[in-house]
Amino acid sequence: MAKKLKVGVIGLGSMGSTHLDIYSQISEVEVVALADPNKSRLDGSNKAEGNISGQAQGSVAGLEAKKYLDGMDLIDNPDIELVDICVGTNLHFVFVEAALAKGKHVLVEKPLARTYDEAKKIVELALNSSTNIMSAMCLRYWPAWVWLKKVIDNKEYGRCQSLTCKRQTSHPPGTFYSNDDECGGALLDLHVHDTDFINYCFGMPRAVFSQGYKGPSGGIDHVATHYIYDQSQNAPLVTAEGTWTMHEGYGFNMSYTANFEKATACYLLDNEETLRLFRSSYEPELIKLDEGMGYEFEIRSFVDDILSNKTININLLKQAAESVAIIEAEMVSIKSCSVVALGVEG
Image (cartoon, rainbow, N blue to C red):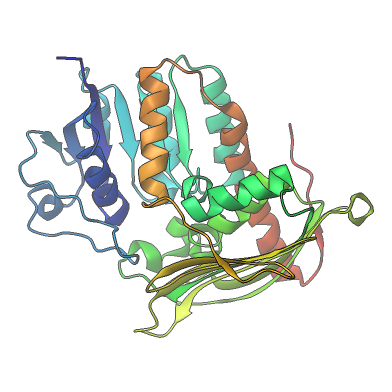
């Protein structure tokens, strides 16, 4: 029997449970350790819920795994090869630093870190590490966004002239999401998905102009941003809105509208999932997407990279760090009600 990659998961909230579900479907992986300061999550008597259908389906039941109340004890376990970090954003850096120092591969949930300074330090640690690290920016792997990235790059429908992204939901439960110092509000915890994908597709914007307001986290929980690119180079008009201020019962949706020279693409995930393409002189077309969520594809990709001894994709990690810098510029723009230029160090 082929040797399995031994994984330890730190944090059994909604994303930790989602990751457990995915690992259970990958034959080359064995989850051998779990860590969470909440005993009821470790024994399975208390389970986090997700806000998207299909999230948080994993369970600790039946797992022959060592259990720790402290994630640092899990990192010290010499059997573990991959540490999956699903703790609060404010704790990402300390756990990433410790895991890389022990020579572990690292998957860290989004965003990469609570601040850009911490994100830059993670990139430096990765550059000096012999192991692999991935920032779990799942939109890069979500089928509808994979399709969008491909047609932007190959110009199948001509140049992308505009892109509008939206991400809307009610305030998620839990003390973490009610503490801006820990989570960064919807601005960092939710909106960063679209900010990162925009950076992934078009690179760093020259500047941002954002408006927003505070919500239940105590930080910015509703934001709308205009990403400013050099129009002299035919850059697209790019905007994104993110909020978790909707009232209870609203549910969750995420969407984009991309207008190309020869077509318009509209995607919406709410109760269902649809991607439609509109072209002059053609009937509207429903695009068939691969089944599955971005979490599944990102984890499978990372496991494959580790097992095939691929080196770290440092460019994607740097982009994840840059996306935190963009978010911080958006915060400055909201506070100052002004356009904020971006100048990110190498």
